Length: 137
Ligand code: ATP
Image (tube, rainbow, N blue to C red; front, side):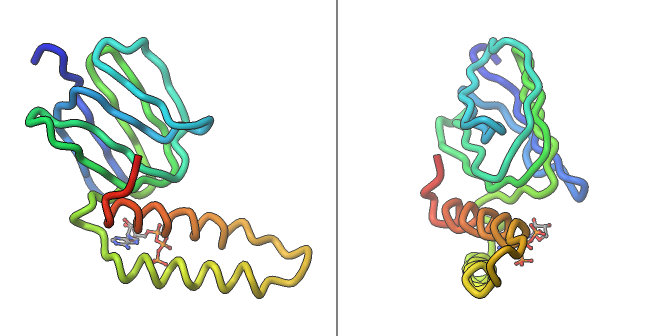
């Protein structure tokens, strides 16, 4: 299709997205990256955040994603992620509970304790909540 780019999002568990998009935004390691059809090839790390794309009907699609890599080619974006969930597959209550657990764990951590696991869990939960509520990028 002219002026469309193929988007595939794959996790170790399943192919989450196999679609065509007119524009795609991904959470690269150094910030959000906007991709249009014909984009120059690149490979980037993916951090925790939201993938957004406009599908062939012009509808905005959102996903929560955590860690991995994206390969961008002029006609295809491939994201290999540890976890990725479409808005409709997110259990909002579970994400809210995960956010609360992570916040409590960060708050109660003794000074000097490594809180990176809880911080990352908090980022994942916040991204899932954003996507479930359709507030992502
Ligand atoms: P939790 O503490 O609720 O398990 P987590 O951030 O530790 O959250 P992950 O390790 O990132 O969970 O993901 C484990 C699996 O559960 C993945 O397959 C992920 O897609 C799925 N998952 C995690 N949270 C949710 C959610 N709120 N809704 C739907 N699927 C989820």
